[in-house]
Amino acid sequence: MNTTPTTSKGEQARSQLIAAAIAQFGEYGLNATTREIAAQAGHNIAAITYYFGSKEDLYLACAQWIADFIGGNFRPHAEAAEKLLAQPTPDKTAIRALILSACRNMILLLTRDETVNLSKFISREQLSPTQAYQLIHDQVISPLHSHFTRLIAAYTGCDASQTETILHTHALLGEVLAFRLGKETILLRTGWAQFDEQKTEQIYQVITSHLDFILQGLTQRSLTS
Image (cartoon, rainbow, N blue to C red; front, top):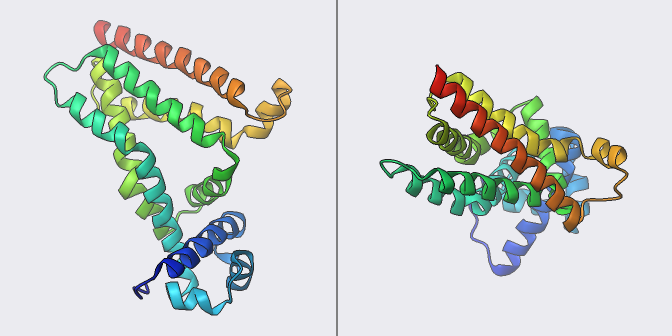
């Protein structure tokens, strides 16, 4: 990837190109054209070559931006999880609160219009993964998924390394993701016009109930197995 030093003006140009590229790549994948990306960003097509080197390098730069964005938003949760899990007997109330805090953060991010293009990019990578997904997965998705799994295991007494525990974690996260990937369905079924603050809180309360069902159910199964 091009490592040309950038000024503040250069950083602004890079940011504009990445924002446009995430939108175009999210919609068309690598079939997106550099001409359309540059036009949407308000730059000459040569700017892509100057700042990134190639379309493929720009694609990876978008993946890195997304990884940094997710990491920045969930770093406090990851650090809190590490501290909590380092305790000999982690407090269950604190575990539940931390999981819910992370879920609330996910809900807030996934119900914002400005993160739609990011979701499209990742969704496309989930269905047809490239090197870009591996980058995002290794840097943020795998560590965060692991933290969730370990927290659920610490609360319920399950084994964090067991596939079943990983699947339960993924199912919980999937409930939150469904409000982005199934957005149109839920808006039509509820009659909502959009996700506003009140609707987001209602979603959070439902996820809270489901989390408690999962934690209680897995704890009971762990005690009787």
